[in-house]
Image (tube, rainbow, N blue to C red):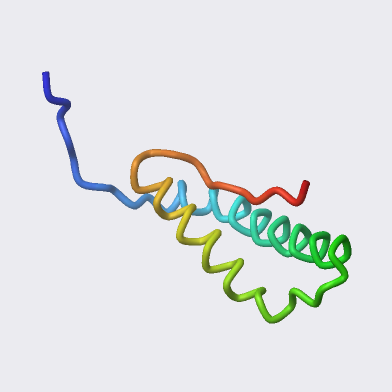
Amino acid sequence: GVPHFTTPVFDAKALVLIAPVALILVAENLGHLKAVSAMTGRDMDPYLGRAFLGDAIATMASGAVGGTGVTTYAE
């Protein structure tokens, strides 16, 4: 059968619990961009905003369907 859909509910306690995860993802994304910059010898600082925006959009898309925050990989 078709699952029962409901509208999202925002709970302040849940937001306080998840907020540190978002900060960690920002720090991790910055670290990965700096690592790629060091590995390639290119200045990636002009792309910092794009990297954050891409990570934010991916995390919002994941959260919209019930997923967790996503991350980047510098390997």
